[in-house]
Amino acid sequence: MLRSMNSGISGLRSHQTMLDVTGNNISNVNTTGYKGQSTQFQDTLSQITQGAAAGGAGAGGQNPAQIGLGVQVAGTSTNFTQGASQRTDVATDMMISGDGFFVLNKGGEQILTRAGSFSFDSQGRLTSPDGGIVQGRMGVDGEVPAGGALQDITLPPNMTVGGTATTAAEVEGNLPSDAEAGETRTLDREVFTEDGTSENLTLTFTRTAGGWDVAGSVGGATAAGSLDGGLSVGGIDVDLTGVTTYAGVDSVSIASQNGSGAGVLQSYTMGPDGTLTGQFSNGASVDIAQVVLGQVDNPEGLEKVGSSGYTVTANSGGINFVQPGAGGAGSLVGGALEMSNVDLSQEFTNLIVAQRGFQANARIITTSDEVLQELANIKR
Image (tube, rainbow, N blue to C red; front, side):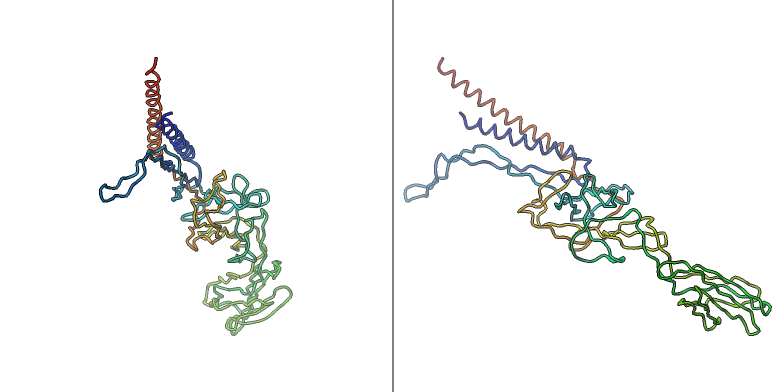
Protein backbone atom coordinates (compact mmCIF):
# COMPACT_ATOMS: atom_id res chain seq x y z
CA MET A 1 0.00 0.00 0.00
CA LEU A 2 1.33 3.44 -0.87
CA ARG A 3 2.34 5.66 2.04
CA SER A 4 0.64 8.59 0.33
CA MET A 5 -2.73 6.90 0.74
CA ASN A 6 -2.27 6.70 4.51
CA SER A 7 -1.15 10.32 4.52
CA GLY A 8 -4.31 11.28 2.65
CA ILE A 9 -6.48 9.38 5.11
CA SER A 10 -4.83 11.17 8.05
CA GLY A 11 -5.43 14.47 6.27
CA LEU A 12 -9.12 13.64 5.81
CA ARG A 13 -9.50 12.81 9.50
CA SER A 14 -7.66 15.94 10.67
CA HIS A 15 -9.57 18.31 8.40
CA GLN A 16 -12.82 16.64 9.41
CA THR A 17 -11.93 17.52 13.00
CA MET A 18 -11.28 21.10 11.92
CA LEU A 19 -14.72 21.15 10.28
CA ASP A 20 -16.27 19.79 13.50
CA VAL A 21 -14.62 22.48 15.64
CA THR A 22 -15.53 25.25 13.21
CA GLY A 23 -19.11 24.02 12.94
CA ASN A 24 -19.41 24.00 16.74
CA ASN A 25 -18.15 27.58 16.90
CA ILE A 26 -20.71 28.73 14.35
CA SER A 27 -23.54 26.89 16.11
CA ASN A 28 -22.65 28.74 19.36
CA VAL A 29 -22.43 32.20 17.78
CA ASN A 30 -25.31 33.37 20.03
CA THR A 31 -24.46 31.34 23.13
CA THR A 32 -23.96 33.55 26.20
CA GLY A 33 -20.37 33.48 27.44
CA TYR A 34 -19.19 30.99 24.79
CA LYS A 35 -15.48 31.01 23.92
CA GLY A 36 -14.44 29.96 20.41
CA GLN A 37 -11.98 27.15 19.72
CA SER A 38 -9.38 26.58 17.03
CA THR A 39 -7.73 23.41 15.72
CA GLN A 40 -3.97 22.88 15.75
CA PHE A 41 -2.27 20.41 13.40
CA GLN A 42 1.11 18.67 13.62
CA ASP A 43 2.88 16.16 11.44
CA THR A 44 3.19 12.51 12.49
CA LEU A 45 6.37 10.44 12.74
CA SER A 46 8.56 10.38 9.64
CA GLN A 47 10.07 7.22 8.18
CA ILE A 48 13.87 7.40 7.83
CA THR A 49 15.14 5.90 4.60
CA GLN A 50 18.71 7.02 5.09
CA GLY A 51 20.41 8.08 8.28
CA ALA A 52 22.67 11.07 8.69
CA ALA A 53 26.43 10.61 8.34
CA ALA A 54 29.28 12.81 9.47
CA GLY A 55 31.77 14.12 6.94
CA GLY A 56 35.21 12.54 6.72
CA ALA A 57 38.57 13.27 5.10
CA GLY A 58 37.48 12.03 1.68
CA ALA A 59 33.70 12.52 1.76
CA GLY A 60 31.24 15.12 2.87
CA GLY A 61 28.52 14.62 5.45
CA GLN A 62 25.09 13.33 4.52
CA ASN A 63 21.73 14.59 5.74
CA PRO A 64 19.02 12.15 6.82
CA ALA A 65 16.41 11.21 4.23
CA GLN A 66 12.90 11.12 5.74
CA ILE A 67 9.41 10.60 4.39
CA GLY A 68 6.48 12.02 6.32
CA LEU A 69 3.60 9.75 7.21
CA GLY A 70 0.74 12.28 7.41
CA VAL A 71 -0.84 14.78 9.75
CA GLN A 72 -2.62 14.61 13.08
CA VAL A 73 -4.55 16.96 15.35
CA ALA A 74 -2.22 18.28 18.05
CA GLY A 75 -5.09 19.76 20.05
CA THR A 76 -7.72 22.45 20.24
CA SER A 77 -7.16 25.80 21.92
CA THR A 78 -9.82 28.03 23.46
CA ASN A 79 -9.90 31.77 22.83
CA PHE A 80 -10.71 33.49 26.14
CA THR A 81 -10.82 37.06 24.81
CA GLN A 82 -13.68 39.27 26.02
CA GLY A 83 -17.02 38.91 24.25
CA ALA A 84 -19.30 41.80 23.38
CA SER A 85 -21.71 43.22 25.97
CA GLN A 86 -25.47 43.00 25.53
CA ARG A 87 -27.79 45.01 27.75
CA THR A 88 -30.75 43.12 29.20
CA ASP A 89 -31.70 45.38 32.14
CA VAL A 90 -32.53 42.23 34.12
CA ALA A 91 -31.28 42.77 37.68
CA THR A 92 -29.98 39.21 38.05
CA ASP A 93 -28.01 39.19 34.77
CA MET A 94 -24.28 39.78 35.24
CA MET A 95 -21.30 40.15 32.95
CA ILE A 96 -17.62 39.87 33.89
CA SER A 97 -15.64 42.73 32.39
CA GLY A 98 -12.14 41.26 32.48
CA ASP A 99 -10.70 37.97 33.69
CA GLY A 100 -12.34 35.42 35.95
CA PHE A 101 -15.28 33.05 36.09
CA PHE A 102 -18.50 32.78 38.04
CA VAL A 103 -18.38 29.86 40.50
CA LEU A 104 -21.38 27.51 40.60
CA ASN A 105 -22.21 24.68 42.96
CA LYS A 106 -23.72 21.91 40.88
CA GLY A 107 -24.34 18.64 42.66
CA GLY A 108 -21.52 19.36 45.10
CA GLU A 109 -19.03 20.09 42.31
CA GLN A 110 -17.57 23.52 41.63
CA ILE A 111 -18.22 24.62 38.04
CA LEU A 112 -16.73 27.71 36.40
CA THR A 113 -18.66 29.69 33.79
CA ARG A 114 -18.65 33.01 31.95
CA ALA A 115 -22.40 32.86 31.29
CA GLY A 116 -24.08 35.23 33.77
CA SER A 117 -27.75 34.65 32.97
CA PHE A 118 -29.04 33.97 36.49
CA SER A 119 -32.37 34.02 38.31
CA PHE A 120 -33.75 33.28 41.78
CA ASP A 121 -35.44 29.93 42.42
CA SER A 122 -38.33 29.23 44.80
CA GLN A 123 -35.92 29.05 47.75
CA GLY A 124 -34.40 32.43 46.94
CA ARG A 125 -31.12 30.96 45.65
CA LEU A 126 -29.37 32.65 42.72
CA THR A 127 -29.10 29.94 40.06
CA SER A 128 -28.00 29.36 36.47
CA PRO A 129 -30.47 28.05 33.85
CA ASP A 130 -29.26 24.46 34.41
CA GLY A 131 -29.63 24.61 38.20
CA GLY A 132 -26.12 25.56 39.32
CA ILE A 133 -26.14 27.74 42.46
CA VAL A 134 -24.03 30.91 42.29
CA GLN A 135 -21.37 30.98 45.00
CA GLY A 136 -20.18 33.88 47.12
CA ARG A 137 -20.29 35.12 50.69
CA MET A 138 -23.40 36.12 52.63
CA GLY A 139 -23.50 39.28 54.72
CA VAL A 140 -23.94 39.30 58.49
CA ASP A 141 -25.66 42.36 59.98
CA GLY A 142 -25.04 44.26 56.76
CA GLU A 143 -21.32 43.36 56.58
CA VAL A 144 -19.92 40.90 54.02
CA PRO A 145 -16.81 39.06 55.28
CA ALA A 146 -13.64 39.44 53.21
CA GLY A 147 -12.79 35.73 53.40
CA GLY A 148 -14.13 32.38 54.48
CA ALA A 149 -15.84 29.44 52.85
CA LEU A 150 -18.09 30.01 49.85
CA GLN A 151 -21.84 29.92 50.34
CA ASP A 152 -24.94 29.78 48.18
CA ILE A 153 -26.04 33.31 47.24
CA THR A 154 -29.55 33.50 48.71
CA LEU A 155 -32.13 36.27 48.72
CA PRO A 156 -35.21 35.17 50.72
CA PRO A 157 -38.44 36.35 49.03
CA ASN A 158 -39.80 37.99 52.21
CA MET A 159 -36.50 39.26 53.59
CA THR A 160 -36.85 41.88 56.31
CA VAL A 161 -34.46 44.16 58.15
CA GLY A 162 -34.83 45.35 61.73
CA GLY A 163 -35.63 48.90 62.70
CA THR A 164 -33.40 51.44 64.44
CA ALA A 165 -34.23 53.52 67.51
CA THR A 166 -34.78 57.26 67.14
CA THR A 167 -32.02 59.14 68.96
CA ALA A 168 -32.26 62.56 67.31
CA ALA A 169 -34.88 64.81 65.77
CA GLU A 170 -34.59 68.20 64.10
CA VAL A 171 -37.09 71.05 64.23
CA GLU A 172 -37.10 73.77 61.57
CA GLY A 173 -39.28 76.74 60.63
CA ASN A 174 -40.47 79.91 62.31
CA LEU A 175 -42.47 80.70 65.44
CA PRO A 176 -44.15 84.14 65.20
CA SER A 177 -42.69 86.62 67.65
CA ASP A 178 -45.90 88.66 67.56
CA ALA A 179 -48.06 85.84 68.94
CA GLU A 180 -50.07 86.56 72.06
CA ALA A 181 -48.78 85.30 75.39
CA GLY A 182 -50.26 81.91 76.17
CA GLU A 183 -50.63 80.83 72.54
CA THR A 184 -49.34 77.31 71.81
CA ARG A 185 -48.12 75.31 68.84
CA THR A 186 -48.22 71.49 68.96
CA LEU A 187 -46.11 69.25 66.69
CA ASP A 188 -46.28 65.45 66.34
CA ARG A 189 -43.85 63.08 64.61
CA GLU A 190 -43.63 59.29 64.45
CA VAL A 191 -40.47 57.93 66.10
CA PHE A 192 -39.23 54.38 66.80
CA THR A 193 -37.85 52.30 69.67
CA GLU A 194 -34.98 49.79 69.48
CA ASP A 195 -37.29 46.96 68.40
CA GLY A 196 -38.86 49.12 65.69
CA THR A 197 -42.05 49.88 67.62
CA SER A 198 -43.69 53.11 66.54
CA GLU A 199 -44.26 55.88 69.09
CA ASN A 200 -45.40 59.50 68.91
CA LEU A 201 -43.10 62.40 69.75
CA THR A 202 -45.12 65.46 70.78
CA LEU A 203 -43.58 68.93 71.08
CA THR A 204 -45.60 71.80 72.56
CA PHE A 205 -44.38 75.38 72.11
CA THR A 206 -45.89 78.02 74.46
CA ARG A 207 -45.58 81.76 73.98
CA THR A 208 -44.47 83.59 77.13
CA ALA A 209 -43.51 87.14 77.90
CA GLY A 210 -39.87 86.26 77.37
CA GLY A 211 -40.24 84.20 74.18
CA TRP A 212 -41.17 80.60 73.35
CA ASP A 213 -40.83 77.68 75.77
CA VAL A 214 -40.97 74.05 74.64
CA ALA A 215 -42.08 70.81 76.30
CA GLY A 216 -41.88 67.32 74.91
CA SER A 217 -43.34 63.88 75.56
CA VAL A 218 -42.72 60.41 74.10
CA GLY A 219 -43.55 56.94 75.40
CA GLY A 220 -44.61 58.26 78.80
CA ALA A 221 -41.49 60.40 79.29
CA THR A 222 -41.75 64.18 79.48
CA ALA A 223 -39.22 67.03 79.53
CA ALA A 224 -39.06 70.80 79.19
CA GLY A 225 -36.56 73.00 77.39
CA SER A 226 -36.00 76.20 75.46
CA LEU A 227 -35.16 77.29 71.95
CA ASP A 228 -31.66 78.23 73.06
CA GLY A 229 -30.90 75.17 75.17
CA GLY A 230 -32.63 72.50 73.13
CA LEU A 231 -34.60 69.55 74.48
CA SER A 232 -33.91 65.92 75.38
CA VAL A 233 -36.86 63.62 76.04
CA GLY A 234 -37.07 59.83 76.24
CA GLY A 235 -33.53 59.40 74.88
CA ILE A 236 -34.22 61.63 71.85
CA ASP A 237 -32.14 64.79 71.44
CA VAL A 238 -34.28 67.44 69.77
CA ASP A 239 -32.29 70.02 67.80
CA LEU A 240 -34.02 73.44 67.94
CA THR A 241 -31.22 75.55 66.45
CA GLY A 242 -33.07 75.72 63.13
CA VAL A 243 -36.09 77.48 64.65
CA THR A 244 -36.39 81.25 64.04
CA THR A 245 -38.73 83.81 65.62
CA TYR A 246 -39.75 86.41 63.07
CA ALA A 247 -43.06 88.24 63.19
CA GLY A 248 -45.93 87.15 61.00
CA VAL A 249 -44.64 83.74 59.93
CA ASP A 250 -45.88 80.47 61.44
CA SER A 251 -44.09 77.50 59.79
CA VAL A 252 -42.46 75.41 62.52
CA SER A 253 -42.30 71.61 61.97
CA ILE A 254 -40.36 68.50 62.98
CA ALA A 255 -38.29 68.16 59.82
CA SER A 256 -36.57 64.82 60.42
CA GLN A 257 -35.78 62.00 62.83
CA ASN A 258 -33.16 59.24 62.47
CA GLY A 259 -35.11 56.11 63.46
CA SER A 260 -36.95 53.57 61.38
CA GLY A 261 -39.27 50.61 61.74
CA ALA A 262 -38.71 47.15 60.31
CA GLY A 263 -38.49 47.07 56.52
CA VAL A 264 -39.34 44.57 53.78
CA LEU A 265 -37.10 44.06 50.76
CA GLN A 266 -38.35 46.04 47.78
CA SER A 267 -35.49 45.94 45.26
CA TYR A 268 -31.81 45.12 44.90
CA THR A 269 -28.81 46.19 42.86
CA MET A 270 -25.51 44.57 41.90
CA GLY A 271 -22.35 46.66 42.32
CA PRO A 272 -19.14 46.40 40.23
CA ASP A 273 -17.47 44.58 43.14
CA GLY A 274 -20.18 41.91 43.15
CA THR A 275 -21.98 43.25 46.21
CA LEU A 276 -25.72 42.56 46.23
CA THR A 277 -27.36 45.51 48.00
CA GLY A 278 -31.01 45.43 49.04
CA GLN A 279 -33.28 48.46 49.33
CA PHE A 280 -35.93 48.08 52.02
CA SER A 281 -39.28 49.75 52.61
CA ASN A 282 -37.93 51.64 55.65
CA GLY A 283 -35.30 53.35 53.49
CA ALA A 284 -32.40 51.16 54.64
CA SER A 285 -29.78 49.91 52.17
CA VAL A 286 -28.14 46.68 53.34
CA ASP A 287 -25.30 44.64 51.78
CA ILE A 288 -26.85 41.18 51.53
CA ALA A 289 -24.13 39.17 49.79
CA GLN A 290 -21.14 39.36 47.46
CA VAL A 291 -20.55 37.26 44.35
CA VAL A 292 -17.05 35.74 44.26
CA LEU A 293 -15.08 35.04 41.07
CA GLY A 294 -12.76 32.11 40.40
CA GLN A 295 -9.40 32.31 38.64
CA VAL A 296 -7.02 29.59 37.42
CA ASP A 297 -3.39 29.89 36.33
CA ASN A 298 -4.04 28.31 32.91
CA PRO A 299 -7.59 28.87 31.62
CA GLU A 300 -6.87 26.93 28.42
CA GLY A 301 -6.28 23.86 30.60
CA LEU A 302 -9.92 23.86 31.75
CA GLU A 303 -12.22 21.08 30.61
CA LYS A 304 -15.62 21.86 29.12
CA VAL A 305 -18.48 20.03 30.82
CA GLY A 306 -21.44 21.41 28.88
CA SER A 307 -23.95 24.15 29.74
CA SER A 308 -21.15 26.71 29.18
CA GLY A 309 -19.31 25.32 32.22
CA TYR A 310 -15.71 24.29 32.92
CA THR A 311 -13.96 22.14 35.50
CA VAL A 312 -10.33 22.23 36.57
CA THR A 313 -7.81 19.70 35.30
CA ALA A 314 -4.25 18.74 36.21
CA ASN A 315 -2.97 21.37 33.75
CA SER A 316 -5.29 24.25 34.65
CA GLY A 317 -4.26 24.64 38.28
CA GLY A 318 -6.60 25.06 41.23
CA ILE A 319 -9.24 27.74 41.65
CA ASN A 320 -8.33 30.99 43.39
CA PHE A 321 -11.37 32.79 44.82
CA VAL A 322 -11.18 36.59 44.59
CA GLN A 323 -13.52 39.55 44.88
CA PRO A 324 -14.53 41.17 41.58
CA GLY A 325 -12.12 43.95 40.69
CA ALA A 326 -9.37 42.62 43.00
CA GLY A 327 -6.35 40.40 42.37
CA GLY A 328 -6.46 40.88 38.61
CA ALA A 329 -10.09 39.76 38.34
CA GLY A 330 -12.58 41.69 36.25
CA SER A 331 -15.43 43.78 37.62
CA LEU A 332 -19.11 42.92 37.31
CA VAL A 333 -21.66 44.73 35.16
CA GLY A 334 -25.25 44.25 36.27
CA GLY A 335 -28.12 44.05 33.81
CA ALA A 336 -25.87 42.84 30.97
CA LEU A 337 -24.57 39.59 29.49
CA GLU A 338 -21.33 38.67 27.74
CA MET A 339 -22.02 37.34 24.27
CA SER A 340 -20.06 34.72 22.32
CA ASN A 341 -16.63 35.84 21.06
CA VAL A 342 -16.99 33.84 17.83
CA ASP A 343 -15.92 35.84 14.74
CA LEU A 344 -18.20 34.65 11.94
CA SER A 345 -15.99 36.05 9.17
CA GLN A 346 -13.02 34.07 10.51
CA GLU A 347 -15.11 30.93 11.00
CA PHE A 348 -16.46 30.97 7.44
CA THR A 349 -12.89 31.43 6.20
CA ASN A 350 -11.87 28.42 8.31
CA LEU A 351 -14.71 26.45 6.72
CA ILE A 352 -13.28 27.13 3.28
CA VAL A 353 -9.75 26.24 4.40
CA ALA A 354 -10.96 22.99 5.98
CA GLN A 355 -13.06 22.13 2.95
CA ARG A 356 -10.18 22.69 0.53
CA GLY A 357 -7.80 20.79 2.80
CA PHE A 358 -10.24 17.89 2.90
CA GLN A 359 -10.64 18.06 -0.88
CA ALA A 360 -6.88 18.09 -1.47
CA ASN A 361 -6.33 15.08 0.78
CA ALA A 362 -9.15 13.23 -0.97
CA ARG A 363 -7.28 13.95 -4.24
CA ILE A 364 -4.20 12.29 -2.72
CA ILE A 365 -6.22 9.13 -2.18
CA THR A 366 -7.70 9.09 -5.69
CA THR A 367 -4.28 9.75 -7.24
CA SER A 368 -2.72 6.95 -5.17
CA ASP A 369 -5.56 4.69 -6.28
CA GLU A 370 -4.81 5.49 -9.93
CA VAL A 371 -1.15 4.67 -9.37
CA LEU A 372 -2.11 1.32 -7.81
CA GLN A 373 -4.44 0.69 -10.72
CA GLU A 374 -1.60 1.29 -13.18
CA LEU A 375 0.57 -1.09 -11.18
CA ALA A 376 -2.11 -3.75 -11.26
CA ASN A 377 -2.47 -3.29 -15.04
CA ILE A 378 1.19 -4.07 -15.68
CA LYS A 379 0.28 -7.74 -15.84
CA ARG A 380 -2.94 -8.54 -17.65
